Image 1 (cartoon, rainbow, N blue to C red):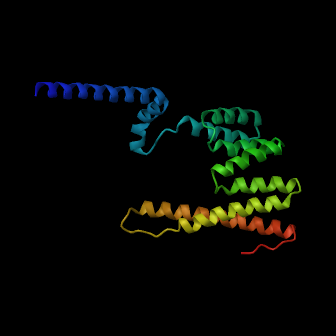
Image 2: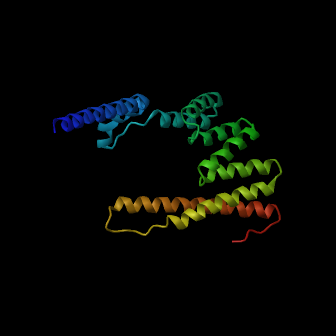
Image 3: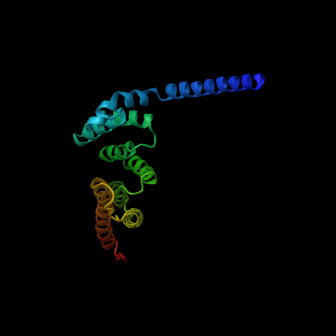
Length: 205
């Protein structure tokens, strides 16, 4: 009986040690994220949460692009890509290359972005514009069709079935998501029709 109790105590010690080591590893690997989370908890409770560094950098880069300060924008975007190679920053990097007149690099970045984020109408429109500029209307039409189909799929998928047993805010958010996909579908469809008319084709609904 005493031996069994001793073994249980030893196992408990080892288990606690393993849990402690796991927590220590997680804290070490995610120290930045944990520091941000703990520092922002009080702001979260009041609804005035501090944005993490990635969002701050993204907004700064967006501002510099609007101001046509391309060097500053590129510096921030490269830092963002270094933090997360699969972030939304790829879209802005595509915008940067487009504004800089490097259409090949813009096409590469935006095409990769559409593989990651399949419903951003702005990316599809920009890629189509690059193909059209190069004289390849067939590829421009193809990319617009793909973007339109992705958004139409989501129009059906996220069509809100309003549930009045949940908070009104949840219903509003569901409606907003649905309306976003509807609007993006409308924009892409309009551009597709115009481009196909230029190319001598009719878009079949």
